[in-house]
Image (cartoon, rainbow, N blue to C red; front, top):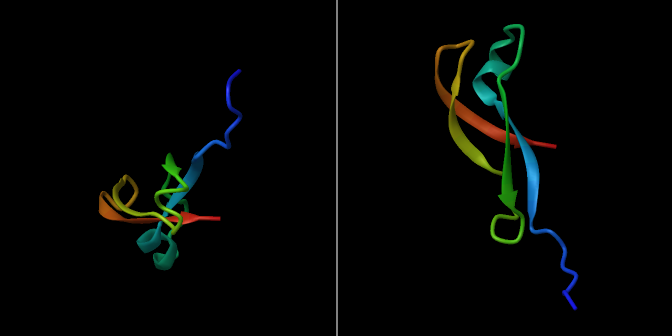
Length: 62
């Protein structure tokens, strides 16, 4: 019989912090997954923002 375990990987949404602070219309968001057992804190990753046309810090929301 197979063991029943909780899924460790969850889907998270990353949102640009610079774009949000600038007040420009639109948003830059990325969807990714993370292992909630290894990284219980919120993710903070540098990603490309196509509206600002540069690499910015994206933080996990929700």
